[in-house]
Amino acid sequence: MPFLIETWDKPDSQALRQQHRATHLDFLAANAAKLLAVGAKLADDGSDGGGSFYIVDVETREEAEAFLAADPFSQVGLPARHVITRWRKAYLDGKSYLPPKA
Image (cartoon, rainbow, N blue to C red):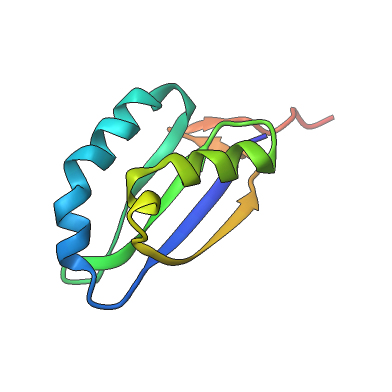
């Protein structure tokens, strides 16, 4: 069952995020098979919102934690905090994953 990971960047860390963005994107590309969705959080005006969301298709919390720990953003200390939550797919890309009604 997938996990949703939400991160919040440390204050005033935009330069650190930009410095390591290419390596982070390479990491995501290398792990694309595990990614159901991922992206930066944005402010309403489209500027950086200081964090990210990931929905990773892994079986255990330990795998989700290991995924986040291996992310270059985590390795350089970008996140101030994170939350990992088990997630149930109901709809994804317009497709229902809900059981049929009896």
